[in-house]
Image 1 (tube, rainbow, N blue to C red):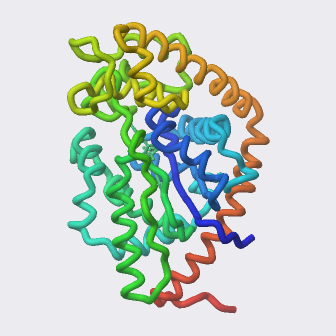
Image 2 (cartoon, rainbow, N blue to C red):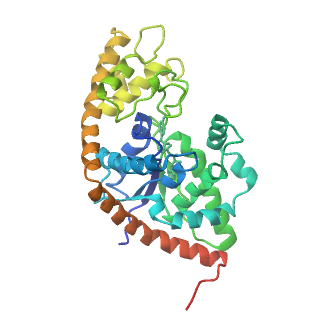
Image 3 (cartoon, helix red, strand yellow):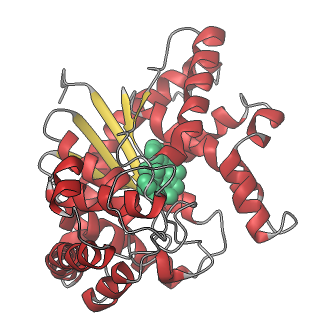
Length: 337
Ligand code: TYM
């Protein structure tokens, strides 16, 4: 069904059993809000997940877990198209075309690749990891997305998407919409609770600063209470001088809807302990029903799978049309009987 709402598209990897708080605050929360006003496409990017070594049984389970968590967070298949990337073969097909348009040097400049390759040892990094951003370009362009709701770490991939869309359009004629990043300043980058100089990520050297949404609420409370702050005791937002406290305030404000000045006032004259104890409670109140809802979806895999199959059908209708146009523009001979 054609819609004249602007279109958004985004994806999340099923690389670990649980989403972390950065995924939720930086991206998924915005997905839920945007499905009300936009024609939204959201997917679990399993093809991206195999760019690093994976266990097949775990990947399958984690793909379901990712879908279940999106549903638990409020992504609603009645309001958006929710699907699994590998169910729509057009992603890999357009990915190839985009590979053939990308310069080797251009791909080499992708900072996420450099970081991930450095972590694994450059020798062990696969070509799939190298071309990962180009598959992401295909993900976005297939749906002619206007906006892409993500965290700050994805900005460079969206810039690449715009560059390649422009290049394709310039060379072969207008085909692709140039997408804009949709990155909310406040939550663009949620930091590790133990090291507020680095973003919260599942690949951090210690799990102590990582809030997994599906962890035991007790574990989560403990992690919040032992978050690193600084040596003075003033509760004030100052991302540069007080990154730890500022990160906690961002999380607190976003989860409760309170303004940061309001929180600063509330905790005036109180120590970090009070802030952390209250935030731990806020977190527990958030994750407890989230875990329960996720488990309910996981308990009924048939319903989950059929919902994803329906989503893939809707997604394919759009993706196949775009791919056919791209093939035609590039000059690939159509098969005709
Ligand atoms: P992924 O799976 O690493 O992360 C999913 C989303 O979570 C955001 N995010 C964060 N936001 C704020 N603070 C953090 N600490 C934090 N950590 C993660 C990410 O920015 C992302 O929005 N390449 C993508 C998946 C992808 C995609 C796409 C996204 C594949 N195709 C097409 C958009 C459009 C990724 O690895 O996300």
